Length: 199
Image (cartoon, rainbow, N blue to C red; front, side):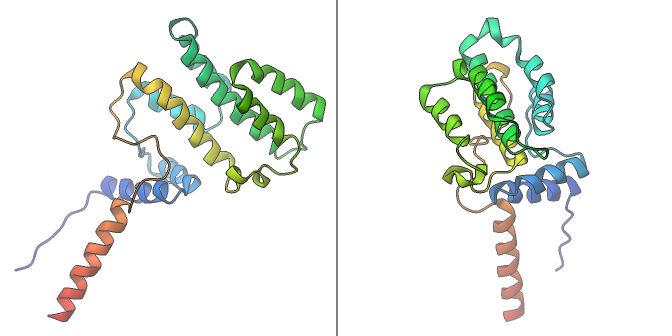
């Protein structure tokens, strides 16, 4: 008896995106999203729009989007603004053009200082002593795209309760626990194929 399995293209794309996210290939995941028009996370209209702004680095629009939180949830607003400003600062250090002069970088840091804790501010200051962001142990694999994705995930932990979006549990983590669904399915298919050959 033969069975025919029909796979929806969207489901396959989402499985591949899940795998890429699980393996922290964020740049590839975002490129696949752009190419296919499918998004790896179902965040609702508002948060989906904000996610796009952050992943494309449209910082002014992203900051305008969260501006209403300034009065309704000032602490949450501060945390979200800090996440954006930190990413902007890191991208400034890593910029394709020449790195800005130290006085300009210090000026940027002064604007960020009121938004963060002393430890967070010290870490940002430490980046000024490095010739490359990746010299920092926690940022060895940092890229602008990975940083933007992590920034949005940080923002999402604050914004998710306010927007009440339906998201899968543990979605805020870039690295999932265990194996991705794609790997599990491929292992099952391989086992099935091995059993067929054995028979």
